[in-house]
Image (cartoon, rainbow, N blue to C red; front, side, top):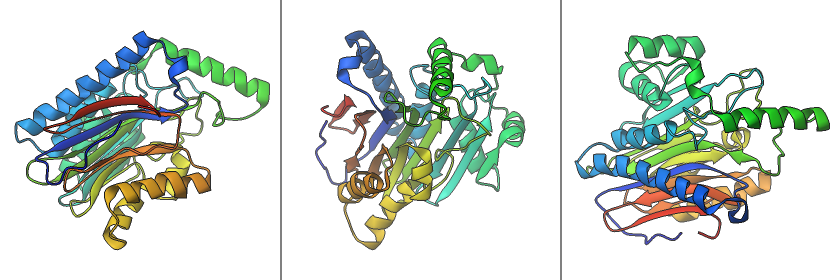
Length: 319
């Protein structure tokens, strides 16, 4: 899926629904159609905000809420299960104009975690809130709360059973090396008509995870980053690598300090730096001129973009 690199487009929005071992041969056409419909629905939600002169941040939140509400994706409803058979959610949001950011992690009852990240950004003096404290803050902000059973999805429950069975068979904990492993995170980046950038990311984490493990999603600079001077980035992949290599910030830094364009910076980090380190995943990114990048070193990545003249949706490497 190629994009024309257009300078100074009025707005642009890019989103992802996770990356990993995603092969066309393993996906029935009907399921592929479901993913295309879901990604297009999220594009519509975000673009509607941008067309109405809304902010990049509100567009990002609107798009991510659609993905969080869809059990096809590992964020919000349909999040994967931990080893204790619970759902632990995380999200982050960053504003490129003032470099403000908000994030939450380890929550179990916030219907749309991205709205909690936005509340932290806009209504608190903090950047990252966790667990019960984040849930209390969400309650005080009058955000939508749900019983944890809301997040249950049959295919995720079966996924936990498979992971535990594989663990018993191999003795390998958390199954990072599953051949069918998918890094199920959702994210969105946007440029609005005022020239402001924003990035957001949301996830249910890792199937069969233990010890309240936190990945890159709520870590500013790893799971997401936005700076009006460079770009906005949202990540999806093996979180431990994205944290250690500060992937989202590194792309911005290469643009700022090495004067690389967006595609060059993003491709270097994803296809060279991460590959050399053994990290798997991808990013979506948009720069201050509306140029778009969507590199991934996995077999597939659910991804989509829109600007005033182009629109595209892809899943597989060959798309």
